[in-house]
Amino acid sequence: MPIVKIEKNKNYSYVLWFIDEMTNSLLKELKPNNSELEYLKNIRHIVRKRQNIVARLILNHLANRKVELCYFKNGFPYCSNFKYISISHSKNYCVVITSKSPIGIDIQSWPSLIFASILNMVAYNLIDLPLQVFMQLFFIGTAIYGWYNWRKEENNEPLKVTSWSNKNHLKWICLGGTATLIFTMILKQFSSFEMLHSNYPFLDSLMFTFNIIPMYMTGKKILESWLYFICIDIISGLFYLITGEFFFSFLFFGYIGFATYGYMAWKKNTLC
Picture 1 (tube, rainbow, N blue to C red):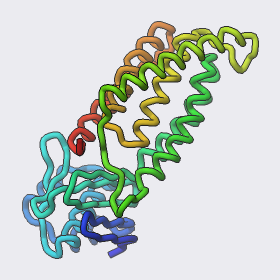
Picture 2 (picture 1 turned 135 degrees about the vertical axis):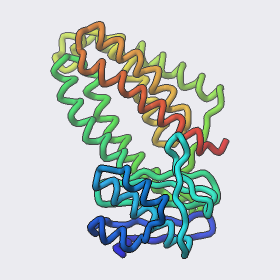
Picture 3 (picture 1 turned 45 degrees about the horizontal axis):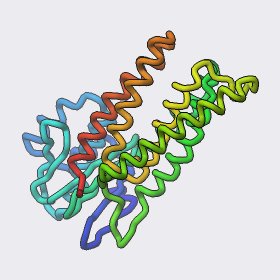
Picture 4 (picture 1 turned 90 degrees about the horizontal axis):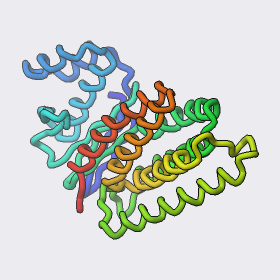
C-alpha cells in the first residue's frame, strides 16, 4: 500500500496515496462488492478508475473496515461513516480528507493556473493588451500564494471557505472602479510606449482590475470570488467576441461554467 502521508488529529484526517499499482492489483485489494463493481465498470478512463479505487481504499483504511463511497447527483462524494469527506487527485496522486466540519482540498488547480497563465502571457502580448500580460504575472504570484495558503494550517485546521459582508464587497468594488480609471489614464498617457500601448485602454484596465480582485479572494477562499469571476468572464467573453478574438471569447464563456461549478462547490462548504 503506497501511502505517502497520513495525518490525523481531532479535527480532520487525510491520506495521500501515490498510485503505482495496476488496476487488477487495486481491485484485488479493494475486494469490491456488486455496487462498487457496477460503478467502476462505467469508468472507462483507466487512470480515473484507479483514482476512484484508491479513494475507496483510503476510506476503508481511515474507517478500519469496509465502507461505501457514494456520490450525490451534483457529483459531490459522501460516505455515511464520516460527516464530511473531500477527494482530490492529479495523475498518480490521490488525496482523501475526512473532517467533522465542511472542508475541501485540491492538489492540481494552482499548478494548472500557473501553466495557463504563462501561455496567456504570450497570447495577450500578440493582440496588444499589456495589462492582461501583467495580469498573468500577478496570477502566477497569486497561484503560488494560494497554493501555499490553502495548505497552511492555523490551529491545526486547513483554510476554510468563508463569506464577505456586503460592506466589504462595496469597499472592494469601489477600489476596483477607482483602480480601473487610474489604469485607463496611465495607458492613455503613455500609449507611445510599446510596452503600454493598448487598443482598448478602459476595457483592458477593467478586465485587469476585476480579475485581480477575485484572484486575491480565491487565495483567501472567499465564496463570492466566483461571482466576481462570472461577471468579468461575461464582460471578457463579449469583448473578445466583438473584437474578433474568437478563441479568447470561447475561452472566457467556457470559464463561466467552471466558475459556476466552483461557486456551487464552495457554497456547500461555506461556514458563514
